[in-house]
Image (cartoon, rainbow, N blue to C red):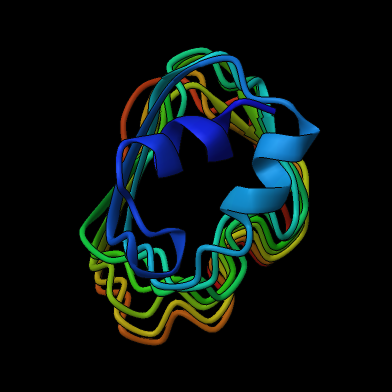
Length: 193
């Protein structure tokens, strides 16, 4: 990989790099270096050619992330327990979010695309800072997708939403308002238990 050479040739210290914006293609050697950057708290991947983010690719200290513009999938445990805050925006190119992909992150806003994206089991388990979820044209196939999100107060389900997984909002005890707009294809059992 060329990442390490470029970074150090410009006088940057990998051990102390706080903000990192990456462009273009990254290979396995580049990722091996990036994964060790445990002081990096802001990571911008928007202009990279990364199509998949899998478990342990993202440094453990990252609090803010911009996902690649052409990402296809967030695999199981991709962002698991990262201290991400603010907004997590899933680009329209993303078609799959795996099990526990965003488990335990600290965001206060989640933006999902209206592209038929498939959402797996416990994908957003224990997102305790978000208060509202809007589901447009999504396919929630996994059970307990938003299980135990303690502060969700409002859920908006739009036309084209398909929930075949069970217990999607189970354990969301602060839930006060559910709005269903348009044609809902399926609503799994115990969705709001």
